[in-house]
Amino acid sequence: MVNTKVTLCGIEMDNPIIPASGTFGFGYEFAELYDINMLGTFSFKGTTREPRFGNPTPRIAEYAGGLLNAVGLQNPGVDAVIETELPKLQQVFHKPVMANISGFSVAEYAEVCEKLDAQEQVGWLEVNISCPNVHGGGMSFGTDPKAAASVTRAVKDAVKKPVIVMEPVKGGNLVNLPEDAKAVLEDLHGGSPVSYAIRFVAGFPGMMMVLSGMSNMEQMQDNISFMRDFKPLDETERAAVEKVQEIFHSKDLIPCTACRYCTDGCPKHISIPDLFAIMNTKQIHHDWNADCYYEDVHTAPGRKASDCLKCGKCEKVCPQHLPIRKLLEQVAAEFEKAPAAN
Image (cartoon, rainbow, N blue to C red):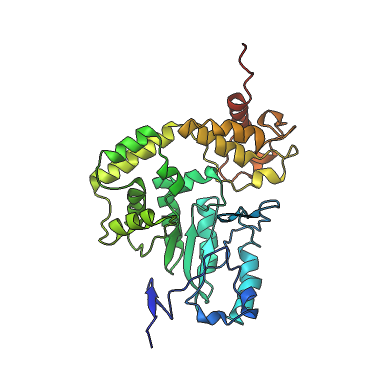
């Protein structure tokens, strides 16, 4: 009989089959269908400090190429996971499970990880600092090396169990870098933009695994090429990454993490994180599609940036302490310009 045992971050598993976070709920739901102990482990639903309802429906759609989803990190919050979900799981799953954690500030990541680290059944902590469900405003964690480092350090200082950093490089933005940032990395003649970002994160002391989402064979081969014989960034490469970071900062981007706390109490129901995300996109790529998204997707009559009442409710709950009212004025100035006269 074939031996399928593998070791992940020092923990032995019967096999390498690991259903991904978000696709498998909290696991016990599938125990009615088959014995889930046949899995190596699984990563349970992304968990935040506070409960999150997620995005409004519809948020899942089938199409010819598969399935599109934008669930929005729906979860009951870490305390409910510990008090309700994990005890249910313990009754049907008798192996270590992987906890997936999302957050909107460094302190929140550390707090949630610390709580889950103390749970006996949790074997690994999978820290999601660039979730696809969190729109481009998550850039402050996903593409800023110092922000990624601060989250990683805070989590490592707070826990004892293995840490897996999920999607740290915000791959979409790296594939389509601004020309000036792209030129900095191309001058190194040493690999793809993604390779430098992954090697940056993987080079931290104690970092045993870095996950990378891949969409085709070319991307998989690229990842294998620099991870087969892994080497952390040298001084020249690290300086280049820091230069790219400076270029992004010079774009004067809005460091919104799309937690959406601001939208819950907005009397005008303005989709603030989405408006900040398309503002960032236009700043980076000068993308004309951003105007289309502003007019046709993320706004409606009475819900544009200029419709802000300046009540300040959003700023009181923003974990990043952003001057949201002032930023919405800038968004309105960019996207609500009067048509040019003929």
